[in-house]
Amino acid sequence: MNPALIVVVSLAIPLLWIAAFTDRQSFNEAIKLREMIAEILLSLAEWENGKSTVFKILTLKSYPENLVNRLRLIRGYMIVRLVVKLPRKRSVQAASDVLQQFYECVWGSAPGFPPSGTHGARDQKIADMKKSFLGGQL
Image (tube, helix red, strand yellow):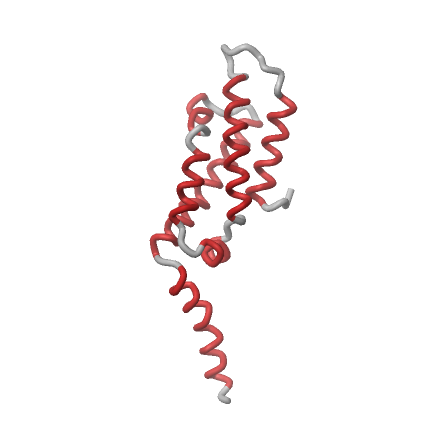
């Protein structure tokens, strides 16, 4: 067999897989999901440093639902995930659940509200969420 033909076929197979199981809209949604994850991690870093605003805290409430909705819109997540460098679907879903609990902890201890004594739980939720998004690379 011709080596050039082998190279062309081996390069074409991944492209055929991507074309067969995904579409352009899924790819765009995956990119938006990656940007949303980066924004969430940035918001958490700002909150840890005490630079977060009330608006940022309020936007945390919408993130879990948006993460799950974006996951549903992506066709062929397993393949797109490798191309766009996203965490596993299960990790994003787990982080979404933890993010909702984190929001409730943060908002419950916001200025003007009675302290709830959940600082340790809140810090643990931050660590769990980062671990889910970053794939345990902490």
